[in-house]
Image (cartoon, rainbow, N blue to C red; front, side):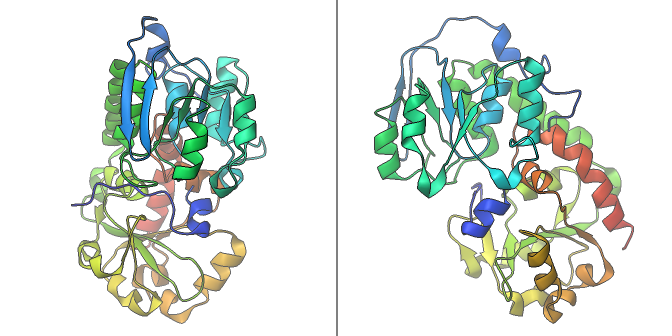
Length: 339
């Protein structure tokens, strides 16, 4: 059984993969951390790249990768700096659920800086952080060795882009001295997902697929975060996914089966997917083998076109879940109507 959650397949998927409703941002339940005591017990957190020793309550947090920004905000602290993510942002320049949450608080928006392989370390130094959160990221050992000299830095537990959503929340809660509140966030998310489940979806199967160009076809495994979100709504992952291990791409929680194996998806009632842009969608949908996938052929497809929504539905955290769920169900209903 896979419990890994990956954040990148190649440059394409790192960009493409990557819920706060208008009334839910900064709710009392999500800001529980801000209301509890101010005492802080020093903590030590071991991870794949080293050890972070946090001796004082963090006040100036910087986040890298995905999901840490949202959890820090939900625990009561708006980061002073975050890794930019243009693909998933809207015209504000921020991912909308982050922009909504911060502006509702009346707080300053975090400074954004270049991340990934071009990580702007100098920009991070200027932010004078006392904690750097990167538990779901691709930070390298070389980058970490620079970051740890700036502030205690928390990377992934085993390999890059590898951490479960609940473990990420708990790790951040521990680092911020908000472990009890982090548990409340995990419980709230589980409740939100459970309450969103639709009994009429019970016997409907799906596969969540992706492409990295013509001729390619990948299928996400059951444990991947976007698959987990869809499953939580009551849909059933097509059992075919359990037969794809020979095509597994390490570090992605997926199998790159190739378009020549598209017929393996013949029993999937619904197909969930996304495209990097309109041109990518056009070239992929033009492929004969792709069009012959039964769910694709009859239009039983959930393929959001808004990049922020694609991002929000790809990561599970206190802000994305309600934001994504309210947008997901109508799209799924449209696809189900084609069965």
